Length: 382
Image 1 (cartoon, rainbow, N blue to C red):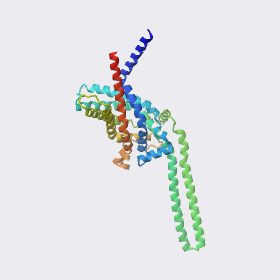
Image 2 (image 1 turned 45 degrees about the horizontal axis):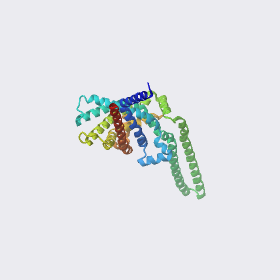
Image 3 (image 1 turned 180 degrees about the vertical axis):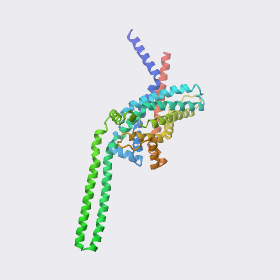
Image 4 (image 1 turned 90 degrees about the vertical axis):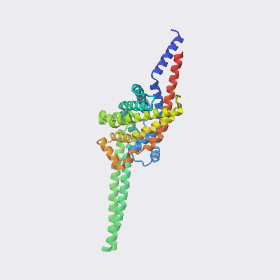
C-alpha cells in the first residue's frame, strides 16, 4: 500500500468516526464553551442558595475579596470533562428516544413535537442524573469549601461582637449600681465598690470573650486538613464519611429535577426553533441563539425550587451535624424561614446566566452538527 492510498484510508476512517459520533462531538464542543462561560454564574448560584448574602452583588464582592478570580472558577476543571461526558450522553439519549417516539406521533405538528421532545428530554435527564449526581455533588462541595473553612472564624467574630455588647451592658449596670450605692453609703466607699464591681465584670466578660473566640477559632485550623484541594480527594472524603449513599445524597430530587428540566429544556428549544423558522427554511444561528436562550430560562424557572432543595441536601452531607433528616424536613424548613420566595433564593444569577450560556450552547451545537453534515455530504460526493 503506497503512502497516498494509506492517507486516503486514514482520512476516510476519521471522517466515518466523526460522522458516526456527530452528536457526541457537537454536544462536547458546546458543553466546553458553555461550562467556561457559565461556571462563575453557577458558582454564585450555589453560594447564594447555601448562604444568605442578601444580594447577588454582595456575593460577588465578598467572593472576589476573599478568594479573588479563582473563587469564581473553583472546581472548574472536572466539569470541563464530566459535563462534556454527561451532555454528550444526554443529547445522544435524547435523539434516540425522540426518533423512537416520532414513530407514534407526527413530529411536524406542534402537538407531536411537544410530546416527543418533552418525553425524550425527560428520559434523557433522568438517565443522565445517575452519572451526574456524584459529579455535581463534588463540584458543589468544591465551590463552597472555602466558605465552610472560614465558617468557624465568622462564628467567632459574631460571638466576640456579642460579648462586647454584653460588656457594655454590664458596665452600664455597674454604673447604675454605683449611683444606688452612693445614696445608701458614703460617697468615697460607694465609688470604690462601684469601680471594683465594674472592673470585675469587665474582666469576667473579657475572659469569657477570649475563651469563646479561641474555642470557635480552633476548628478553623482543624478544617484546613479536612477540606481537600482536589475534586478527587473531595469525592474520597465524602465516600469515607458516608459511603456510596453520601455520593448520591439528593438523587431523588436531582433525578426529578433533571427529568423535568431536560424535558422542558428540549421542548422549549424545539418549539421555539420551529416557530422562529419560517416555512421549510433551514434554521439560522440567530434562531438557535434565541431558541437556546429561551429554553435555558424556561427550564430554570420550572426546576429552581427542586434544585434549591437538592443543593441544600447535598451541601448538608459534608456537615458533621446534619441539619436535614429528610427531603420533607428541608422543604418545611425553607418554607418556614422564607415562605414561597425562599424556594427562588438565588434565581437572579441563574437567569442572568441561563440565556447567554444556553443560547451559545445551541449555537455551537448546531454549528458543529452542520459542519459534520457538510463533511458527510462532501465525503459521499468523493
